[in-house]
Image (tube, rainbow, N blue to C red; front, top):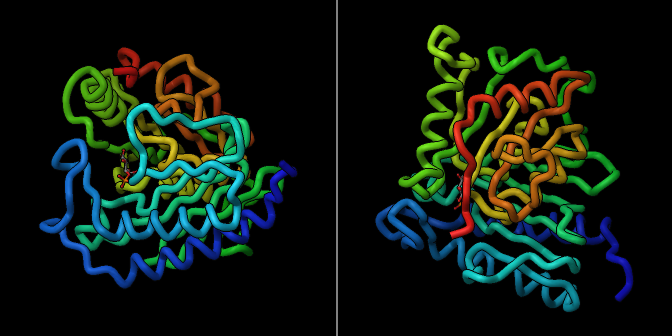
Length: 291
Ligand code: IPD
């Protein structure tokens, strides 16, 4: 197999994302007609399925030797392999989509040796196209290089940070308790053992959260429970914008893209590692998604 042509893959993923964007914009979703997967907040619509079908058919025809991992065709036990692999979330932010809220994206990543090397995230409602190829920088709408501030400010602690978090679809047990307790501590004032972050944001698309950390408009994004298709594309966009990705679990500096635990921090001349350690100190326990 010849080495993947990353520029060509990037251009193909943009075309596919724009076609998917038209499908998303033309759909008329409603939360009454959405189906459930694992539980009543893990939603899927006919549009998620139709978009994934279009994406997988197009990519498999053009790149028959590469693997494909998609949210809507995933079955327990499937794993991300080390060969060249497309990773697709047809609609990241399905909950927003069914409620008509425009924080929605299609997320298309490409990995080699399980490392994201091309990423395309497209929000068709806002016409925001985030893209990156490993080693070539990250861009909004092809021309605006990320982050927005080419000389970003240093990170000066959680008490100056705007932090994205998400509730996810697991709403019970130890993993949920860790999230809830951590949110409380991040928001609380110092006298109550908290970090008093500027605020927490929970907007409903992991892929867009990573892109907004890449732009520098979020300082950080901490989440556990989401999947490789939620983060693969945003991962390379963030890294190409100078960001860092550790694990949501304290002490884990080198997370796996399919490890389901992530902590993204924006590019900055200093303070990135300190911010990671400061947040980790607020996390009681370790997420475990092995069951
Ligand atoms: C969800 C979003 C959300 C995250 C969930 C994901 P979906 O993806 O990324 O932000 O908290 O864990 O499942 O289901 O809309 O593709």
